Image 1 (cartoon, helix red, strand yellow):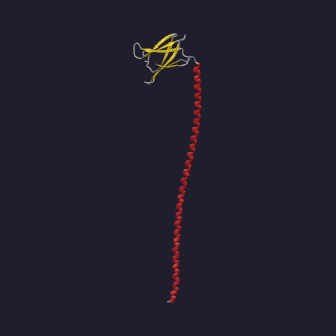
Image 2 (cartoon, one colour):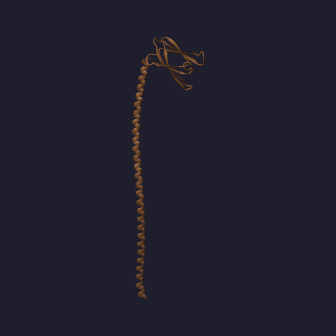
Image 3 (cartoon, helix red, strand yellow):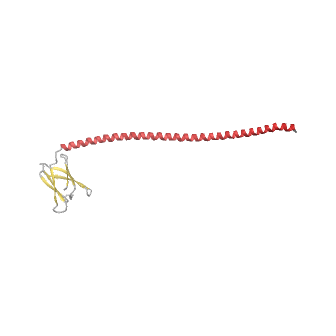
Length: 190
């Protein structure tokens, strides 16, 4: 029996080592498979992150292009606004120069109480020796009303204009008389 036991011990030991080795190899194979699966999942996640990053980079580049275009458009519009402001200032100075070069309208305007109605009547005197065609523009800022009338003024004459002619004047009304050959006459009804 002793020989049997001695011969079994190395065989049992070998079997144990073989079983342990096979178990260890299975564990290594499972660990390698798990690591491979983990590496695959990491690769998938990495690919997903790369796609998202690529999309974000593309979106940022597109936003930067849009911002550059918007800045260029803004700069262009600001230049255009400055040019228009310069043109307006130039036109205003031309208008002021032309208005100051024109002589005063040879007309005086006074106001009296209406005899047959309410309100005031404008008394318009033509102090020149010629016929004048003027545009009478009146505005009531309180009631937000405005009208224009064409008037023919005889030389050295007086014309009454009141509610029968189309406007009942009241204190605070704004009056302007226009004629192409003269400077505009502006006044406020007292």
